[in-house]
Image 1 (cartoon, helix red, strand yellow):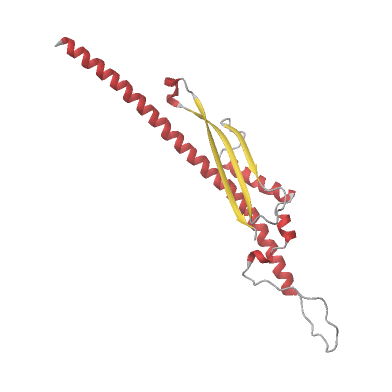
Image 2: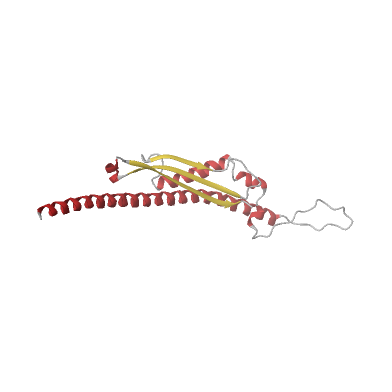
Length: 191
């Protein structure tokens, strides 16, 4: 009977160790998953902060074009006068993107706009604690178009972030830290 009791204790000890190891992996995995989701949400918010700047500029450009068009007064043309320059068709007021000229679209990706967008994106990341002053943030990449492509229908802001994560129970497997990669792509139409 004593021999069986020793075997039961040994089996229980092994099963307990396996159970504790599985719990440790589950706890670390869940924590890393949650941290990954928080990083993704912060990157999405930062990208949208940049899009707000682009959207505000688009609205400003459209309002300026509509205001200019509304302020043009037409005068009657006397009979027998040769025709003047051909007028262009005015877009419908609610056809937002038709009011943007090619020059307007070029200013949306010009260096001043790139600077303002990047500043707002980084400011949002600072608010979420994901800037380079955070010792766990390894790298941040912000991609914004640097030239106008008339064939591209959208304007994209892409963000990538490498973040160091500590693995609490990783010491058991001699793995103390890892890297989480986060990314976000926010898009606004240009046409």
